[in-house]
Image 1 (cartoon, rainbow, N blue to C red):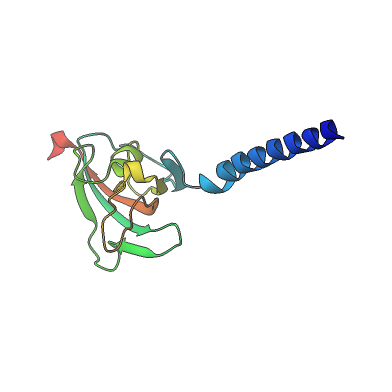
Image 2: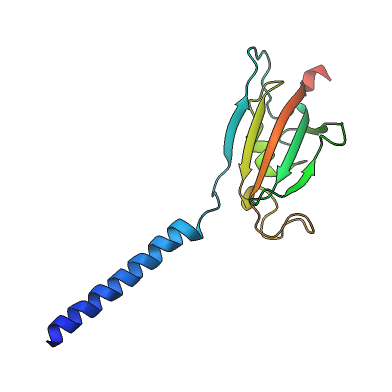
Amino acid sequence: MKTIVLKICKFLLFFLVFMSVISHVVLGNSAPKKLQIGVKKRPAECPVKSKKGDLLHMHYTGTLEDGTEFDSSIPRGNPLTFTLGSGQVIKGWDQGLIGMCEGEQRKLVIPPELAYGEAGAPPKIPKSATLTFHVDLVKIERKDEL
């Protein structure tokens, strides 16, 4: 009788540990650990692709995981202009916008490590936030063309 009870206890302990691990993997780690890049629209012709050092003119809309919009260039009517790879924008942008064509649209899902980290950017971006950006590359100015 004791051996049966002992076996049942061992099985239940194993089952609880197993379920705890599974729930942690499935539920606890829902945020992406790396940058996710999705191409939403690509122009038919692409004579120039963005690279480090290019001056990019981008329209964008940024949202939190729950869909809350925290910023957008579209209502302002002016695209954001910055030098790619220079650290003027978050790391997820510097990495996720390489190789884009003028007129291309992408969806970037950026983990906290490549965005604003553990600190966030209060009040609109909470701590450790995964961010989604819908970006549209309006214009590329090549360094040697400036």
